[in-house]
Amino acid sequence: MKEFLLGMKKGIPVALGYFAVSFSFGVMAAKGITPLMATIISATNLTSSGQYAGVQLMMQSASYVEIALTVLLINLRYSLMSISLSQRIDPSMHLGTKLIIGFGITDEVYALSITSPHKLTAKYMLGLISLPFVGWVAGTAVGAFGAQFFNQDLLSAMGIALYAMFIAIIIPDARRSKPITLVIIIAIAISCMFYYIPGIKEIGLGFKIIIATVIASLIGAIFFPINDDKKPDIENKTPEESPGDENV
Image (cartoon, rainbow, N blue to C red; front, side):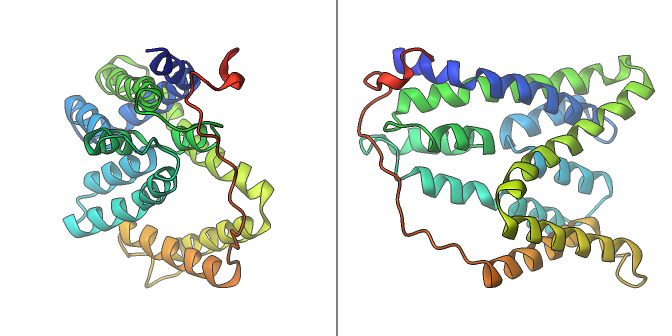
């Protein structure tokens, strides 16, 4: 139980941030789908950028193929995160528990998990993902169901929060890594081409995202390969045994 509570304590800041961002998502989604549908999407997907892109495409009556490929590409990073964390989790963890934890892995949860100095037990991980999940779903519900009661100017302004979230995700890595900065610039340049050049500006939003992401990623992989020969030292301690967490 102590491990579960420690995980919950670690997830409190993430939950608070998710509530604010998902509130904006709920407000945006309510413009094209029902509040209940928006809440269900958050409860079954738990992916900020993927949900935003998916709902936008739904509102534009995009094809199923376009929506599926776009959301798959955007959310593909979660598979890589889960594979990375599989080397850190308790070997005795059951498959069902692993699937639940895999569902709850987000960018912020992954960051907290991968930097943990101890083995990731089932109780700790379940505690870590619980509050962020509640914060994300609750924020979506409040934003979607309450959208009709808010001033229109306020609703328009809240949309900025989603873009701010995207910027907050890429800026820290861009400041630390020149290759990442260049890949971001390439993706922006390709997006601008789709916006301004006649003949290709009519391509659907989903396919624009797919093409820009794939090309920028390929260029980054070819010209800026990552050599990861060093593996971090991982202690086999549980969260209860780790002295660094006593005062968290």
